Image (tube, rainbow, N blue to C red; front, side):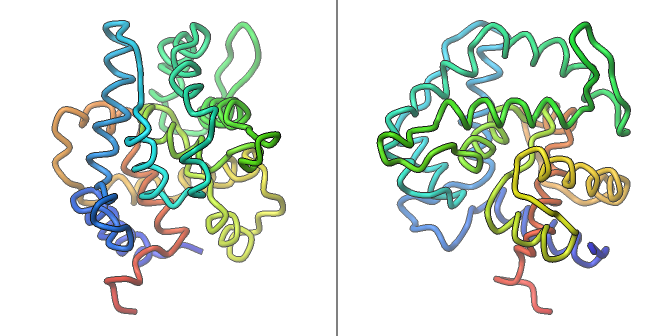
Length: 244
């Protein structure tokens, strides 16, 4: 299980990635988390506030894929233009500006009621991830089927207010090894990550963090930083510079 030392180490790693990016990525492709956040979140914010169109260039998507270690085959995924069209769907915009507003205000695992069904705060992120993953499914074109990891990474940086967790094969492996995860679905992974979030929330909120600048308000509103640190803590992604 996670220890305080694990969380502190992951926090140090998160600060480094925010400022400098991953040294394992080639310098020509490397972007910091701050740069990825500014690219993807800013476009969404401008669309939500000013109805400006969202368009991510192939270069920007390539940078996200390489820096987040998504399968490089996705660089040429012919469905990449669907990312912007998905984010600007009226139903997605509505859920981001109405339903999720109430879900992120609460810092417990409270269940909220709406005219459709009962939802917990992490379920919004789960639904968005599954929907976008299906949009990116290019199995018939030999691009690898439903893209859960790719979708979660795009949404993690684009929608910081929403409780989206970074789905990845290494994360699934560690959750199975150390935390009792049984399957590998988005539903199971997000539910377990949210359980860990709630368990360690107070500790995560006390961690040091960089100066976020203009994005600080939405980062705080959606606990983006806490989820970033938690992801790295479960992955044990600190060995590159923190001695045991």
